[in-house]
Image 1 (cartoon, rainbow, N blue to C red):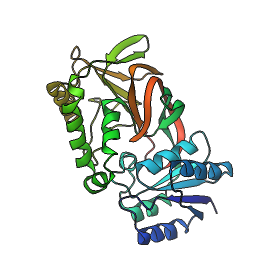
Image 2 (image 1 turned 45 degrees about the vertical axis):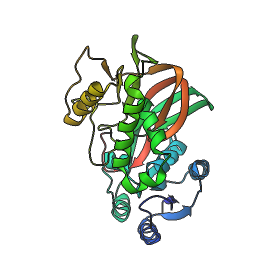
Image 3 (image 1 turned 180 degrees about the vertical axis):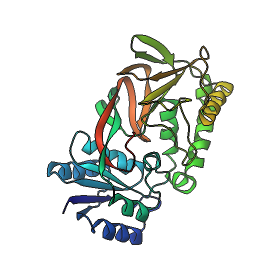
Length: 308
């Protein structure tokens, strides 16, 4: 019988004791299952690394995108797969990968799926907290995008109660109050090309979204790999144009202060002053220098699709 660990976050917005017991009983049909109840990201990472160290087959993350992110970072480069049981607010990664949004349905589906290699984006950064290496499973953001995440996290009750609406209203508030007049402070270098920006958004898989079932496409045609969209102006009109084109899946016009990078090996970002950055909705601090590297097949994920 294959082995698995179920890491549960009871503070996730949709977590219930009854749901946990049903998920556990379903997984136990197939797996020799252990459970872990870490109280913070460090304990989550430690429990994950212990499971991978003894070559456990799967570590299931029962929580929101934060728990999935920390479990994934403990599994990158190992033969232990990530399983996702979504009980968070928006559950972006599970939506992208085609995993059912109800915990019991996700568990029932998971016991029929095989682990599949899945891309991540690695970010190596010099930050106000020291050097950092982290993998993003669905999104990476520098500048405005990360500032919205940081601001939204200061009101956890609103995040839990209003979900995507909370992120949307926070984005508008931060744009109007600060970012519409921000000057470019990110020097981006990719394949010899330079671009100065105030925001850089990276989608690991198509589409990119924090807004639940409402996707944003950074590219009109779904890219085969990672895509990074950078903008050097976040005025009200320009921001509305960027969002509307992403929502309607229109191409971004050349010469309008927007640059789309696809099919690249590496992007280097120099920030002066330091800029906030996030991965999968988790604030990582403020960076002065960062390198973004797509890595195909870095993580095994129990999922239905084989095209991401």
